[in-house]
Image 1 (cartoon, protein in one colour):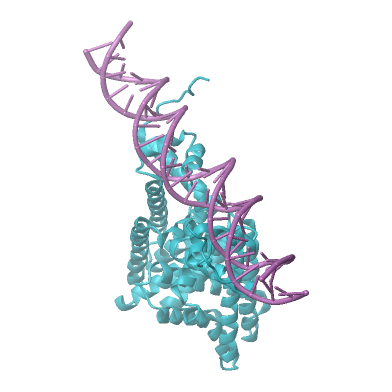
Image 2 (cartoon, helix red, strand yellow):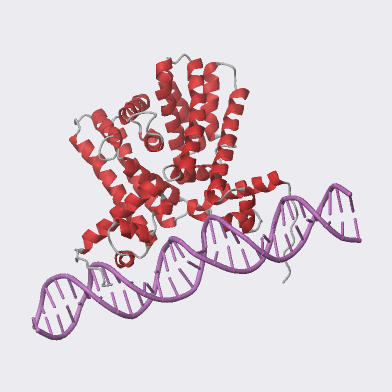
Length: 197
Length: 197
DNA sequence: CCCCTTGTTTTACGATCGTAAAACAGCAAG
DNA sequence: CTTGCTGTTTTACGATCGTAAAACAAGGGG
């Protein structure tokens, strides 16, 4: 039996393939399915290659969280940039974007839940989580300030908005039959109305 | 080396010990830490005993979800029973109880997140989840109806309330330094105000 | 006092895990 | 055509996983 052939790829391409495969495995099988062998098979690569690009499976999972987090943040920022320039429209755009493509993707949401489940047990993931959510919340706080919310109220209101969005994400992912992304966006909008007084 | 001694316990006691140990392991180590050997060690029992009370590890995890779910539901119902009889007070009691003892327990919330991460991959857990959340939502819908919410609006508003509560739970568990349970309860109350119009 | 039931422990097995290290193959440079 | 670098695969190892089945011990009924 001869050794399998392979094509040489640029480093960043393989790295990204592994990250994407990791996200996919986390999405449809949870943490238990994101094994070295399963991820590499999903990426169409032999198991040994993982440690050529990452320090280990934990490092790959962390890199995946970072990548997915940056992708989400970029999508949110893009939504704000494309929105009407009025403060309220900008805030709405930021929040509602969570329920539109490319963020409202079942696989992405499932991956996100897997990351949540790792925060308490994995220190590196915990640090990453604090970083990602800090940035997310900072974005909301800035938009709240634009809308005339008192500086002392921004922190808690940003938490409250993040909580509703995460909760709706969660239910949209775990029980997608009970409501639609449009209804989720509608509820989020209503929450903004309530918080802006 | 002689065989270790042991004391004979009533079946339900050992069963409950294993369930509690499973919840504890899920809480502080996530799904990865909830192995047969780790759980049995936590329960002070030899590894082989698990299969005397459960069909396997998956069965134990499911039983743990069911038990924890029932405990939460009982606490919520108790809070409503102790509340003022006016409809709005009863609804508030149901929602705010999520941020008071015994529900607002870090270990319980961490366990809950672990269950979320299993829903998509494990059919039995998914069925259980639908059951538990169905009951939870039904409780809110009944209280909303008491408060004069139109039948057609109850479903979506119950989803919205559940989402905010879950989102606040999540952040309270993953980033407990950013806000307090009291602030969470305050936000939930405000959400009720907004939804009741 | 002995036996019988059964809760409990022990031991063993095959599968799979993450990782290390060696063997190989593609491709550019000489 | 050959050489050297390195991306990639293969193989191997020790650890740990869930489970099956046998060995044992505790306590009650004859």
